[in-house]
Image (cartoon, rainbow, N blue to C red):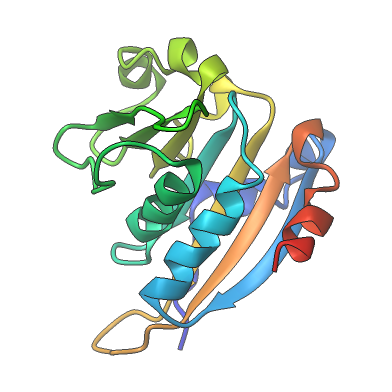
Length: 184
C-alpha cells in the first residue's frame, strides 16, 4: 500500500497558482530498485544544464540521495554523492567541464532565511542545484524548476517499488517530457 504524499510540492503542482507558472507533469515512472533509481538520475542528468533547480520530495528512504547519486554520475562530477544531512550542502565540481552539482539537504533548515545563508542564488547560474526537502524553502530561487516526487510503500516492508512523478514548473521544462521519453 502506498502512503499518501502530503508535501507542499505535491499540493503546489495541482493548485491554480502553480498552473499559472506553467506546472506540468512531465512523466510518471515506476522504479523497482535502487539501481533503476540511480539510472533514472543518470538519464535526467542528460537533460540538465547550468541554472537548473531540482527539488526532491519523498519520505525518508524514498531514494532522493540515490537519484542524486545518479545525477552526479551523469553530470560527471567529482566525489561520492552522499546525503548532505549533517553538512547541509555539498558542492561536487565537474570533472568534464560541465556544471557543478550542488546537493542540499534542507530538512533541518527553518526556511528561506536559513537557505539564503547558503548563497544558493550565487551558485545557481553555473551549477545544477538539487535540494532534498526543499518544499516551501527554495521555490523563490527560480521561476523554473523540476520537482521530483518519490512515493514508496511505508511500514515494515521490503518493497523496493517507487512511483516517481516529475513536475516541470516554468517554460524551461515545457517539452522535456518528450526528451525524457526519447532517452529511454
